[in-house]
Length: 349
Image (cartoon, rainbow, N blue to C red):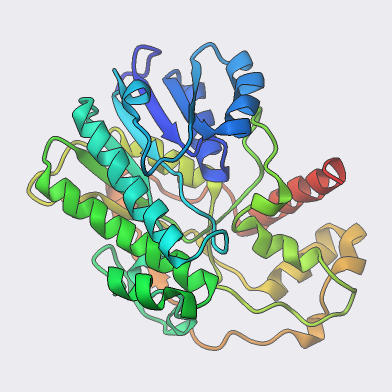
């Protein structure tokens, strides 16, 4: 695909962690990028990114699930839909509305405005049952054909009996399924999804800093610095990861993949760059960032992995998106992430 400022790509959630990296990649590649964000977040984008890039346009939205998006989508070639509620930020019904209604509103209005391609930021967790940590340690191979199971009624009626992560996973799962159903029924929309596990990395260059309370999966690393020296480790989350720069690269490359009308879900792209445990991070920091040693949990209190690591079939990423090795080993991703967060905590103190 020829990259020029004549091609307009819309990025929802452009002030967020993944959205900002996608927008940065598109801007650097020469696309005209419409950055969608709410309220003060949109104002901050106007005062930073839009002043740096002549090919950046900022559009303020109020509610992605109900707003008219026709002005933002008019004349656009593609939409990158990254906007999604963070885990723990909303109850079950609100999460469902934001995730499912938000995604369907984007797809419906994109089709009405003649947008050809939509790339949705989904999640690797959609391959398994919502919020079930036992599936992280089964040794199974996860493929793009794997799906978890949950119903809208279960989330609406029983969701608040579960924890925030279950609600997040269930809403993301229902959202992705609804999007694929829409794509099957509306062949004018060429949909792709990018499904990474936990996404880590530094902030996007030139974009406004993300408040520490909104750093997403990066908090799983940052929490290892929070508390007294020698404390127990926090609960081990899924150990699988991607670098945010690989995730943004996958979104942009997905624009170049032709439609697949006979098998629309063949453009469901699972990502996973590897895995590491909390204790691996602590050992790394003890060696590479000794100034942080008094902020770390006690290694002797670390628990072993409760089972064999699962693996992810990423052959579609390699074959179709032509992505080979990750941008960096996990050690580099972790160090760059925590360097950025420790700098931000000083600036935001």
